[in-house]
Image (cartoon, rainbow, N blue to C red):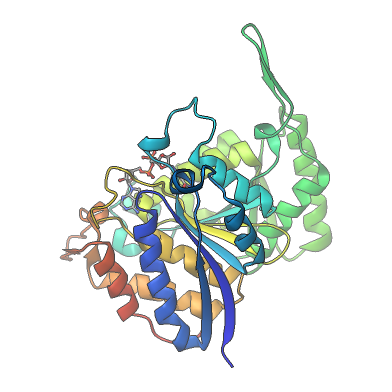
Length: 364
Ligand code: NAD
């Protein structure tokens, strides 16, 4: 009997539907190779949901997500819904679904593909071998603490509790255990009380529960320099919400293209939300040129983290590498040819098809 997984697809706006269509077809092609069945349910979120129902996160979407094994999202937003004064906005759908599913850890792997070494603005010798994972706390810290806003005075509060720190550090430490066994915790403990609690909690938890994982503490200002100077030295990086927000964007630039980077948001159970880090790219939407690889790689993260299908996850990642090896690029990566390589520029659907043609039932 094939194992059946219930997957909610939230294509959303702009290029979201284009990249999610290729992701769905890729999972459908993968299923028979690993004796899996996917039970897909497509639901509304974001601007398209506002247009059809008046809400960026309709009840039907929420219910379907709460009953699913995992959720795959494209992107939300676009110029049509960008009035900052509007009462309902597409990104409320995204924040709402993260909150409703209790997703407090955001995982962003940054891997530099040797085939794309010239895509970044950094030198190839600095980037060679970069393979890191940033785990950002997603539901606490200064973005959610008490605040007041006046015309003469305003404040935000960076508040963390010990359990909030522990649960996200556990996610990061477990990930480190399955990788190279090294965890870097980022804080500002020389100045901030909340960072001193963060650091004490990390030190104690790692000694008690993960003595096999090597841990180091780095101040956030130093971390921004290390990420540019010696990014290949890091394995898993964990940090609070605001520092993580900044570090993840900096780390994304190591890869050189938004179109290659997947992400996962996890909570206590195995259910997670998976999405490319890019937005709805209204400038290229509807033209069939969006890079679907970030979305397809998000499906690989889903197989690994929510479904426990490591072999199937590796099969997708290997197929993406083979497609790049064979010289295929979407237009965002057209400039990445290495000196000894010719590239062929293809559209969204063709890139999805090339990845599917490289899927094989490998095992790790
Ligand atoms: P964006 O990521 O949509 O686009 C930035 C640039 O990268 C654009 O030039 C775009 O063409 C390019 N790009 C992005 N993804 C690509 C892909 N897969 N293939 C090829 N090129 C790609 O960011 P933005 O322009 O700042 O935002 C556009 C809209 O998306 C806004 O409404 C914003 O609010 C929304 N947004 C949504 C999310 C999300 O849903 N998680 C994240 C970021 C932005």
